[in-house]
Length: 347
Ligand code: 5AD
Ligand code: FES
Image 1: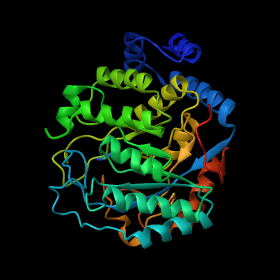
Image 2: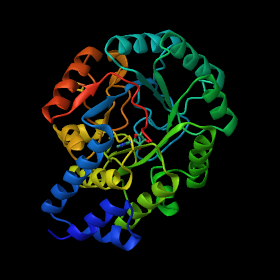
Image 3: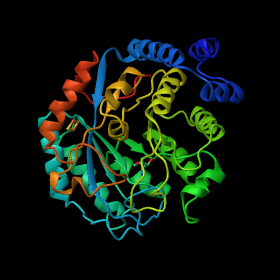
Image 4: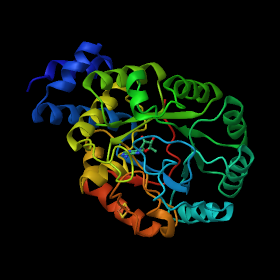
């Protein structure tokens, strides 16, 4: 074991210096990882027990005004077959999810201005009216303060907006000029101020990422103090400018999940679909490394293949009920329990 001392220090203090994080990320062996994951499980079980929270993901539009170089639904991708779900279709997904035990719905889409502030607010209100014991999470990108506030007042509880990278230079390599890290950060701090439970996060092994950049991500998260952190491996998508770039690794993603759990004992940390895509048991391993959330897809099967942020995405052929059953088995196979609850952040 190379890093026991640093892992213990992180466990005790929930933070390390930039140099220490750098050292831990750049040099560790398998024994270190197992030791880290053991502590991460202990910390997560102290707060959340064996519970794994489920979020029903409704991918309601793959139209997007942005052109992020890594993403399969970028506007320049003419091979993407575009779709939008209607308000009724979205409500049907939520109803079906409710029957299956979901108490959180995540409305995710590209930055599609067809869905005006009013349209989104209507959808939120309708879901909350039918299922008042549910949480609604929005994940629709960058909008202004007033829009975020309007949706919050309409009943939205949470917001997911990955920061993608906390290093300006790196941000500019992943995005065209219209997007800036500065605005991304502003959105995140606005959302917090309004009162949302906020999720940030980044891709592991994204093109041009360095260990130094990852350290910046960890330190930025410490400053933001999000309630949720979404990380998953970068996976190339064939129709993007980054089609030939290498994917992130299972090992590095798991190691970062363990670190994040020690840094943020209470955080809601998903074992992502991307993790399940690069390895058949990726999501189970994520749970064993400190994750406590999974986000299966509730979108109609007819559109699932079209929401292709990256290649070979799993679970695109399954009905929602099948997905929920499969996931329950996977969760139980590593000693955890899928729960029927909103799964709010525990203070
Ligand atoms: N590989 C992995 N994750 C991706 N995302 C977008 N494109 C990819 C890709 N090629 C992630 C981004 C985004 C989230 C919705 O999906 O981090 O914030
Ligand atoms: Fe969807 Fe397994 S989680 S098929």
